[in-house]
Image 1 (cartoon, helix red, strand yellow):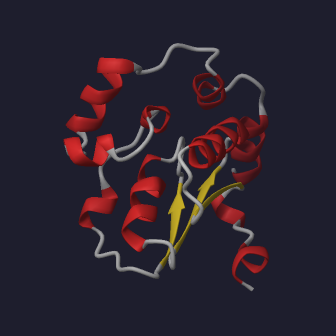
Image 2 (image 1 turned 30 degrees about the vertical axis):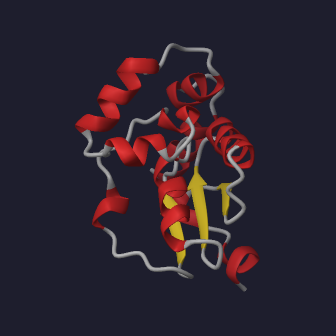
Length: 140
């Protein structure tokens, strides 16, 4: 079963790849904002991150429920375009660190571009399946 899931992740043209690369239409502009608001993101949170991070198929605003403190390390599994990771990076501050992990290379590349463009120095996105996180390389 795991091998079948891994194979499907590597197939070119999966929906996540198409949306992240811009090859398929995705929530943009007012639609993206409406979707994010429906998930519980506040206007202040949405204004604090680049619009490119709003490419979301998420299921809620986990950062709003997390008790993040300055200096903490956060791992965002299934980070997508980086919305939650960027919000977490603001909360943990420059002494903290956020690592976003996503299975889709195009999303990871997009999230890293967005983070660099917005000068988020304490966040990094890596390409990996959740079943095999490269923790030694990142934390060891």
